[in-house]
Image (cartoon, rainbow, N blue to C red; front, side, top):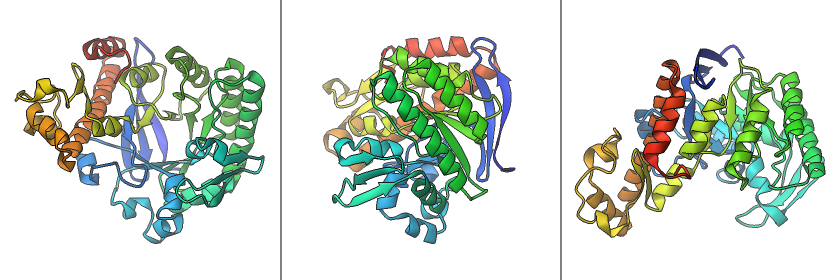
Length: 374
């Protein structure tokens, strides 16, 4: 893929974090970066124009959900996701694996793939590496994911080994099925909390020569230190010239520690989900806008934030909108949370180029104050 490649520009001398530019068919993206999630071809409450204005680069959509509604064939008929949702920047689709495996008793794993039931109407469905790739090719994102087995936490070593080996076999099948030359297919490193399994999975995926690599099986209930160990165990064996993507994390501590470990890309539904519940991330900690103390607070939500919400509205007004369940209020809160994480990663890129990312990480987390990172 001549239109898809990573250009590493600078390595932070304090931590080894890296500043890079990812070149894609739909434009260049500076890394490390947080990627907003648009599960159903929309980031909840935000327009594509707003996303671009706030500095979003790549956004995500979900293969499983879009295969059900409106269907991959319809999206393909519309000209692919970029035209369907009017977003002319890079798009990434996940494989649908996490959603399928999260269905629990509603699914059955075989070597061929996964039999499961539609969560909306109970219809019987089947996903395999080939089916996932076919759907993602129809959706037409710039970056697509291998179909992997998302194991729970915790599991036994024997379970993790069998699951990881199946993920490798599925990765090879998906790579063989992938035909579109304008899409970058990422391999996904699994192996649970076991260092040798992470090493084996990473090394064998690298032998398959994917354009990029994802780190899966994290942020599913394991302790924070275990998560960071799993990330380090994977990154250690991934090629420096390829992008690295840590799936499903969006709190400050995970974003910044992941960056320090050498990860380039992150995604999560966290900022919009928190916003819909009145919880805001600010440069001085978490704010619950529904609290009565903000009823007569006519100051900005976050004076250090440059988003549309913070530049134009007060906490008193935002609380009023939230208490009255006004849609505009939830939109404003979502704009803030998404822009906040994007701006934190902008600061991270600047700090890396100045060889002070370790200091920046400490400053941000100390100012935020909440050890959970959200």
